[in-house]
Length: 152
Image (cartoon, rainbow, N blue to C red; front, top):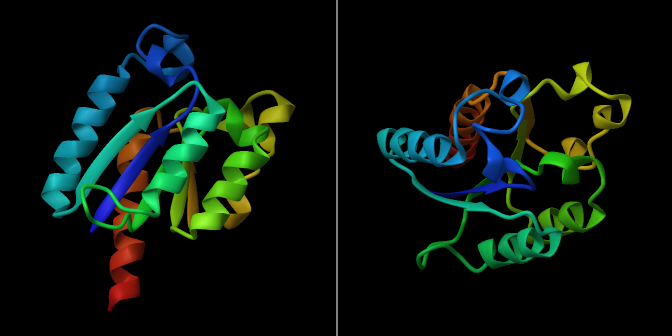
């Protein structure tokens, strides 16, 4: 099983950007932890971050062609601010038809009202938010569980 993690805008600043809201873990630390967890689960994992909406769309499209010669079976996506604005990311996810889980470090429902609406959630297998860096781990576990259940 091959998975892809997509990190949206400003997540490259984790650890220094509003640590009271997003925590002190850096993106490098989160990715390293996810790779360890994926290895323990027996799945492959690639990580990608961009501040550019177009680069994220292109990476989603590339996922349909495969990672390291293998098709991508599932996507974890923290689209960050693009969650609330990007029809292009939504359309790309729908076009490739790869199951995905949406996740967020903060509880988006306890924040500004414009963050309460996700353009991805209704098409996601699930949504995890509000658990800081652990949101990624929870999302990875949930995605692998869902994908394995589909294979049974």
